[in-house]
Length: 358
Ligand SMILES: NC(=O)c1ccc[n+]([C@@H]2O[C@H](COP(=O)([O-])OP(=O)(O)OC[C@H]3O[C@@H](n4cnc5c(N)ncnc54)[C@H](O)[C@@H]3O)[C@@H](O)[C@H]2O)c1
Image 1 (spheres, rainbow, N blue to C red):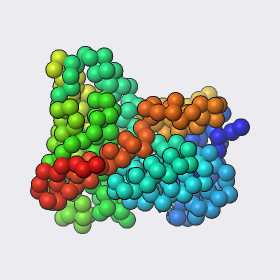
Image 2 (image 1 turned 30 degrees about the horizontal axis):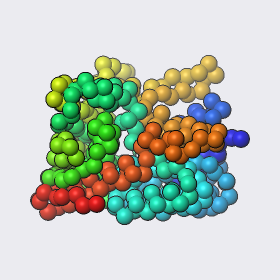
Image 3 (image 1 turned 45 degrees about the vertical axis):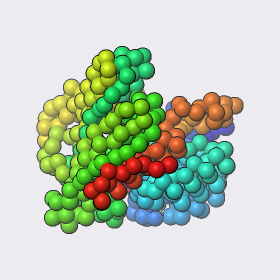
Image 4 (image 1 turned 90 degrees about the vertical axis):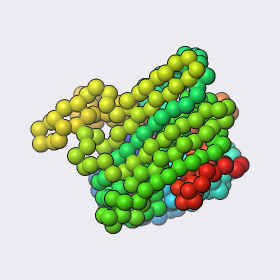
């Protein structure tokens, strides 16, 4: 029986969910049934692009469409009610990062998923990047010895916070939007350790001068269990002319080794007609076409979303949630990332070192 998928939120990143599930549909793995969004213009456009049924009220979509799985791709502070309602309707859920902007909200989601016996997956796509998988495997094989410390950075050009989400950018930050990815990645490669304490600082300068009330940058030093630490720089003010939409990388040092990954410049760069000089992160999204002219996407940005369909197929064929445990970014991982990020923002606000309570 086909796996019926719906999406809540059809904006900038909702389109990546729609592209992914459309491809899964062409591959016979699921049926992309419906999209819910409060913006009727977006609904009309996506209906034309993806042939989905559309709903202004996501609750109506959940009530009518008998969905197996739902992607929640609404603004960061709005995920909670949609995730709870989707689980309550019996759906498996893939929620965008950050899972929620409060620990309490995350814990409610985890409890609801447990009660409903449904999958709660978080779209932490860094885990699906083959370069990062190599990092995890090197650490797991002891090739770095005992991990000690790391440095990670993730930055967007200024047009991302300035132009993309005028309605909710003031409720986000470079740490929420970007840092969540690398905190999850680092936890994953060091064996899902918990955060112990955080010191962070941030600055409101350029974006404020442009009328955007959020941080230009947030830098955090995060201590994890077992004497392992992470220095994380996140920023939202690279020049618009910067060669890519994301600048990012990670280096991890252990007692016996070091591995450094430029997660942005994978060696493909150039200047295409009518475009600026750019580096192409083909690891995230590699576009090609099948012989019928249909788009084909590959890359970690797509695989992490398609993983919802893979997991539902596994469960429908008789597999259990217990068997999947640890094999995807789950609600506990999302909760821990949010717990650390709440401490990061508390430290920025107070100027103090924050001990993480649990
Ligand atoms: N995984 C990634 O790399 C990645 C990248 C970009 C964004 N994101 C995350 O995806 C989420 C969405 O980001 P975006 O860039 O698509 O934002 P966006 O503002 O472009 O899209 C959000 C959509 O949600 C819709 N919406 C708002 N309230 C709604 C409601 N009550 N019911 C239904 N729809 C509603 C809006 O109309 C809008 O179309 C955020 O959590 C963001 O952090 C993740």
